[in-house]
Image (cartoon, rainbow, N blue to C red; front, side, top):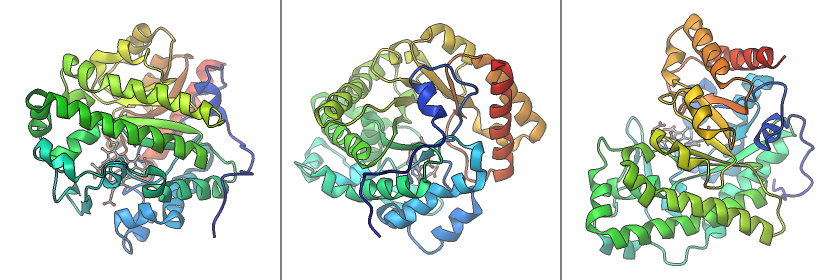
Length: 365
Ligand SMILES: Cc1c2[nH]c(c1CCC(=O)O)Cc1[nH]c(c(CCC(=O)O)c1C)Cc1[nH]c(c(CCC(=O)O)c1C)Cc1[nH]c(c(C)c1CCC(=O)O)C2
């Protein structure tokens, strides 16, 4: 069955959109990074029969997995995020990526020297190469039936550059970082090429039905403050500005944009001024400190340590309560400080969701 990105069912829960616009709301909305994934038994049932990237490329399956946590947790989740991966952009740029069980993503032929950039597709037809994500988004908007809004997302240029050079997850990023100093010009060229694809892709996701956007700079904290300011910040700033311009140019409504620069606590003051409505925090940042630094200029998202979900219900309730109180009745979107881990008990996550919703409502009364 194919659907068009028109006549979407009316939204029944717009809490997260209201808080992102800066409105006062009755409680903190909550969603979880990696909420569709390996901690859910229903995910494994589907995954048994299909490779990871086949699922991403099959709108029916991507839609099914996106809906799994929404079906399971019902009103305890206030947003959905399309099932896909940040590494679809390197694939669109012509690099092969495979998902190896137990190892994660692997690039059989990563970029080694700047000469390897000749292997990248020159003028990527983004809408064609990644049209399968758009189809999954459109289908999911219909199947969600307005229960919650749907996020689209990308990986930030620095994080994707690092994956493309390291060839997958790595203990230290010395290969990709060495480019920054040895091949400075080529690094900027690569970051710009990723940025150009990212802008078109995000706008396409909105055209297809995405109602919010998140940029994952998962490896931001691997850079020194100086290098983050030089090699990440200008590009994530450019993405926010150009997406907004392009949405207007195409007659599309603006959508709230979130930046998650994991580990970049040192850049918090800069992150509030680069065009994102929401700044997502990892657990190493104290919410009260974040409120002081960001001065109410953005909505804050996060940020419990995902490992607390292994600590038993008492620890989850206590930690989540402390966190919600520390964010106060300011603009807050509940989430974890990073993705939910693959071996977490889905019931433990439920306790977290319940606690954030309950306590955030109590402190707003
Ligand atoms: C760095 C990163 C990746 N992918 C992503 C990031 C940014 C967030 C972060 O920092 O964690 C983003 C991502 N990956 C996935 C989603 C789907 C939507 C959601 O959040 O539920 C999202 C938003 C599914 C996935 N992406 C992946 C899986 C597991 C794949 C499998 O079944 O083998 C899922 C459900 C695989 C993946 N993809 C990636 C890694 C490192 C891995 C393997 C290790 C891991 O899972 O933590 C790259």
